[in-house]
Length: 140
Image (cartoon, rainbow, N blue to C red; front, side, top):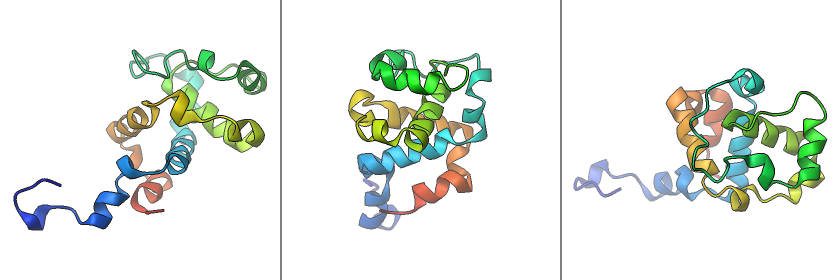
């Protein structure tokens, strides 16, 4: 945006379409799509987790209403307290517990979640996948 060469600067439309400017609703939609990736579906099989250290979503189950966590944890084996576990939880919360999802402001509870997940997904190439990229490339 601050390139000296005017021709190399993004347009206003391109700038406003950047994820930094997305609404909270659009960010949650993105998180749900990432939570629906095969890797997130297999969240219980992941041992390594470096992305939650020092983040607002570290020990994420303690920051959500316990009744909501219990409803979803009780369906299958409990969700792991890692990034993929949280993403899968978010996806399932919005898919299967819509009333609870409507009462849960994820962006307030986890202010650094979207940015962390966006970079996490970008690093793994998930943002280039059609199932995720349509959200990134479309303006709402």
